Picture 1 (cartoon, rainbow, N blue to C red):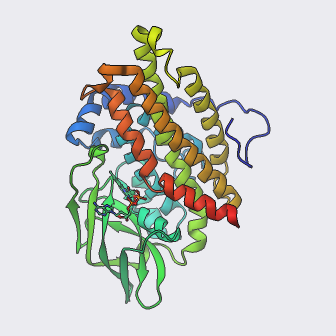
Picture 2 (picture 1 turned 90 degrees about the vertical axis):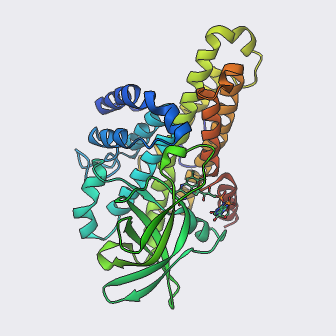
Picture 3 (picture 1 turned 180 degrees about the vertical axis):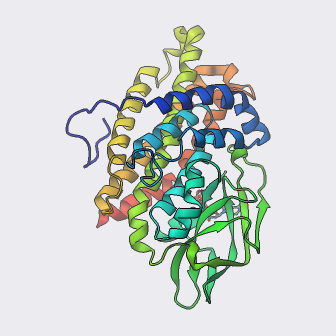
Length: 377
Ligand SMILES: Cc1cc2nc3c(=O)[nH]c(=O)nc-3n(C[C@H](O)[C@H](O)[C@H](O)COP(=O)(O)OP(=O)(O)OC[C@H]3O[C@@H](n4cnc5c(N)ncnc54)[C@H](O)[C@@H]3O)c2cc1C
């Protein structure tokens, strides 16, 4: 059992899968699985799948204003991402981008964005992402803010460049943070890629996540109206949204681990007589996955706790998820052997994807830095 100070007292049973989970599993098997290799190797962006998943309710569960019962089912949103990531973690990451973008608006004070953008994001009619790696590293004292803005009548004019933002397209949205010149105050706003002065720039080819529509973002005098401001002042807002932001990422890691266990099971159908000599076995990884899921769903049941103690537990879990993803993908590769080394094989793809769980912000090194700071207080 993964121990956190917020661990459940007794082993609570895992929530039963909802009907919409079955529909998403079916959609994933029928329409995503045939595309997975081309998403990975040719950079095909799974836009049709994302829109269909949105119609099935994969992106509204964590949004009380958009969910069917008005509740905040963050564990449900994580489970949906797990289902997608177990098949294709690139698509699971795009789902996380979508969920995070909508999460920002749900907790913002902008009635305009809640009325005009949020319902479309929640249903997958509009697609979006998040440019918060740089600001999260800025909060942790790792790097400077890359976007700067001037205050003008009715809004801000933003300039600067961000190297990597995913799930973008000509009319996609994303959340970004800029520093206001003069006051040095950070402000968070929603950007539309169609805004005048904004340009997407092509990234060099990646070793994984190629189909995640990751671009460089170039801001040249981009006007952001006050109605598109998500948070100002920022600190209290960030404290509220950060546990959900990080917990949602667990959907990628847990799904990937599940997918690796499936690869190991398949390999064992013919190779169990020799695979049994490997270090990390199916049963052991499965036990770790059940524990991690339970700890994750427990923390996600009440994600608006802004305390450092709660956030420390969330970061600890996220770190354990990264380490477990690396372990599971290595084991999947070793179980699969030569067939896992083929260019279309799931084992080598999952190995490359697992490193993304470990380097996407907050990366393992960032998590350890933050945990050291929180534990020193
Ligand atoms: C495929 C992919 C998708 C991503 N999607 C997003 C996203 O949607 N939103 C988001 O905010 N971040 C995104 N990132 C960034 C990611 O979250 C991390 O910030 C990034 O991987 C670096 O994290 P790090 O802590 O290891 O920093 P380090 O690797 O230690 O880098 C330190 C700094 O140098 C910059 N840097 C390093 N190499 C380069 C380079 N070749 N070109 C430009 N800058 C460089 C990094 O951006 C960072 O600011 C993505 C990265 C990748 C590889």
